[in-house]
Image 1: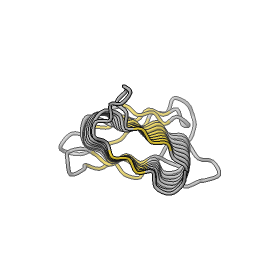
Image 2: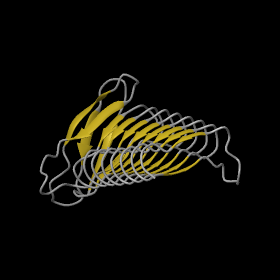
Image 3: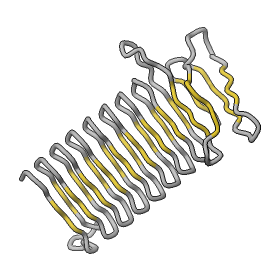
Length: 211
């Protein structure tokens, strides 16, 4: 598994064998490396990876890539790009405008603060944008999408999905499958169409408060 710390131009290799996980950094130039808080085995033979960057005045943008195992991946205070690949992952973008792609598996994605882009991929995924103007795409599987605060865009994709816009003027599209769409507060746009006019697949739409 390779992971690049964008700001530090460092490449980190992780040995996820059964004996002990190690992390070695070899910066390509003399700059401060990205420091990670934990690299430890997870209960599902994966590992836990999180950063320890607390300088809000000079946040670093991280590029984190997981494996085919189950992992806990946590971004920093900058604009992070996180890819979980396989396994049932828990991914937290933290602050900043983050791009998170879960890959395969039943994943949980948390965008947190910032204008985030969350993609579930295959599997039954749970995506929460929280604050900011977020874009959530469930992909294949029975997914749960929560927009949170801000004018969010939610696309359930294929499968029987549940979408809730939260606060703000949101756009919700159920996609293929029997979906539940709840706009919540705000002036929302809801569609249960399956790409063809009048094909609603027994969807339930609730606009909530607003126009």
